[in-house]
Image (tube, rainbow, N blue to C red; front, side):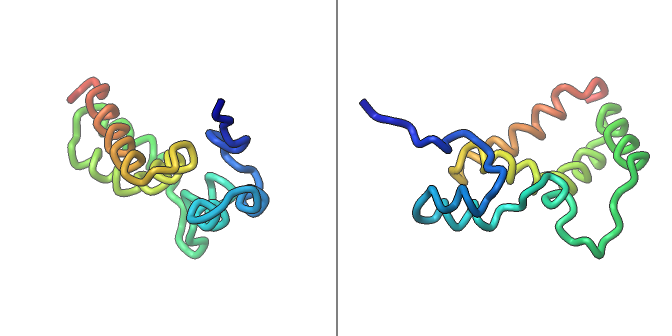
Length: 113
């Protein structure tokens, strides 16, 4: 009977502690992972954050079927989406495919597309 690792499928709250439980490349990836979603969305604290009004306008434009808005949404959010997926599925090829699937699904579900 194969036992699954205790940390599999869980997002570590303390990347350093999780890294101590793992081995190899995954250790390095987890240890280097930001601790919060805010750290993923805004890694460079010197840059101004997007206002909620700007995010709402962008999402509404995507909902209207604006391909340029979808491209902007992808540019702004593909890295945090990829990072979250990598924490859930630590396989780069799968995470890249799932990241694209997220944005394809967003586009398909947009009422105006």
